[in-house]
Amino acid sequence: MKAFNIFFITLCISFAAFAQNGNTVNVNNETGLVSIDGKAAFYMDAKSSVPWETDYAVENTIHKQLAYFKLTKGYRYSTNQHNHDQVQYYKLTFTHSGAHCNIWDYMTSKTIIRSLAMILVDAHLVKNGTIDTVQEKEFIAEHGGFMTPEAADTTAKDKITTSAAG
Image 1 (cartoon, rainbow, N blue to C red):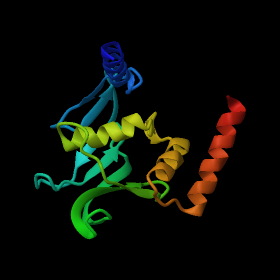
Image 2 (tube, one colour):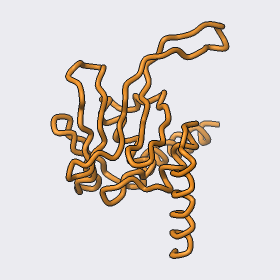
Image 3 (cartoon, rainbow, N blue to C red):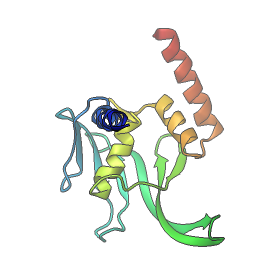
């Protein structure tokens, strides 16, 4: 049993080390610049000066807006206690397509800005200064979001083109 525990702990540590696909991600809390493996990837531009109540625009390196994280307050129904809990969550809207979803469990790091940036990095959403439409569609579906039929059709065409080329 002790050998199993050591194996399990080693496995968990290994998984955590490779969870970011080997990428080193740095977030400058003052400028909002997100760098992956030392290369500037995108900006998280804070749109409010109120602590813990900040919206963020996701911008490429030339400051063109790609997406927007809007802090929202609402209620989440608890089936165990049969009541509503007031919660804060982020609504992520992609600028080009209008697709959006709610991010409920966003605090995965020491700071909100890093947590939100890591959501984008882990999902491989920002590539070459734009939103990857295939990854966007998968992300929206995974988070129970909404995508306009036009955007969904465009994404499907991009996936077919990508599959044919690769």
